[in-house]
Amino acid sequence: MLKDKVAIVTGSTSGIGLAIARELAQEGCHVMLNGFGNAMEIEELGHEFQSKFGIKVGYSPADMAKLDQIREMVHQTEKMFGSVDVLINNAGIQFTAPTENFPAEKWEAILSINLSAAFYAIQTALPGIQKRGWGRIINIASAHGLVASVHKPAYVAAKHGLVGLTKVVALENAQTDITCNALCPGWVHTPLVQRQIDDRAALEGISVEMATRELLGEKQPSLRFVQPDHLGKMVVFLCSDAGSSITGASLSMDGGWIAQ
Ligand code: NAD
Image (cartoon, protein in one colour):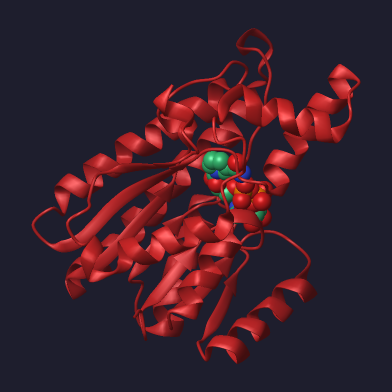
């Protein structure tokens, strides 16, 4: 369906971004991977995508905290593949602490990587997308883009900001075939969430299994994690023709989290 389209997926060496990149590749989309990790494993991943799905794969090591590297990633993709048609702003980090103790450097890092990076990537990719007249921009926000939780001032602020940015970009391109949407997942079992589970287990002196049950029970009525590949399939749907009227939306995939 996305044969010969080109996607950048930031933070695609792990978790949700990796699942999204895989689903796009499966649809014939060339993919620029990005994120940190073991160089050999990333190379192997590229080879796997190429041989399984017959697409082209690139890798940009750009740090999403650095404006010049974000711009370079977009330009490198345009040079390598000829365009950027699908931009998935997914890279993100987390840190939790009460607001009065929240370290300034963590605030700055989360705002840069989880919010400003998306703005800079969109700003750099948009002129080319507008010239070609077709594009899909999908920002991976969170249930925390719509509601708050304690001890996550930077994350909640950044994700609410990302939902706002999504709406502006959608409005500015509403009369074209360029859409911009936010996905708002609840708990997805990735390294980012495993760290929160491990911290909870250590703090409360309970098992990891118990901490997992508590984490889900507190917020996610389904009591099940959201599947990363389901997020990837939602991205593919938004990229389809049937998704062309969905723009400016914040789509919850959260097992009922924000329905409460
Ligand atoms: P993850 O830790 O598994 O993956 C994060 C990815 O981002 C990795 O590839 C990492 O290398 C990359 N990354 C981190 N900092 C980067 C930087 N400075 N520059 C470039 N890449 C960087 O996390 P995940 O759970 O897959 O999270 C992906 C996105 O989904 C994040 O934006 C997160 O906020 C959001 N999200 C996650 C959940 C969840 O429950 N896991 C829920 C809602 C939203």
